[in-house]
Length: 238
Image 1 (cartoon, helix red, strand yellow):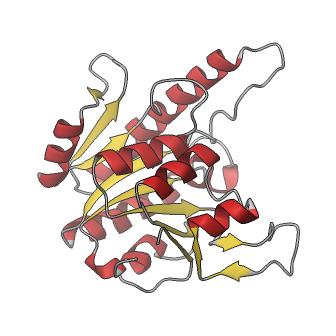
Image 2 (image 1 turned 120 degrees about the vertical axis):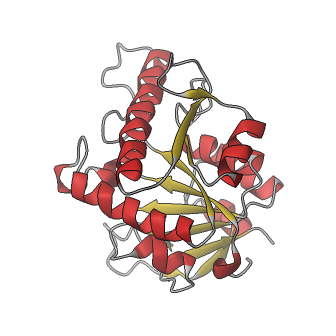
């Protein structure tokens, strides 16, 4: 893993549920503005930032066995579009330039994804949001995160989660769970730790895309991580 302080382009994955704060649904404006202020500090330092947001604050898969998986996944894609439009507007409120890209047409709401256009926007100082997953069912936002990070040639994926790193078991269940400071993707696969889904894990492994996992709810966690004051887990690909 290269020194975090020397990263030039990152893809930040945000949990939709984390952005909902204690409400667990919808948006918590104070939480989103806090994230926006941190990302602005990172962007102002010269780092190019792309963002993927999950949809769990609105939708978490099928709500009924009577619902077809394809339709449920399409609703989830639209949830991520709503999240990105809202969060990008909060980013604009604190002084950043943003663009939202989707893999399908959303009228004038978003831009149709193109690698060349997205990279050009990053180089022009825009925070680029990748919404709508990859545009197809059966693929999670983890997979969209890995794919977009590889496409834009990011230096690393930053995963801002509710849990502050990778553990050998669920720390919400096992109070003696061991936290890893560093672990390889090969070890993640061997131990079935489920850091990201299997498809995304294989993509990161094959394309040597490292991950940095930390707790979003820790104070100033995004800025601290980018400055090397890191309390999470490095997931290496070497």
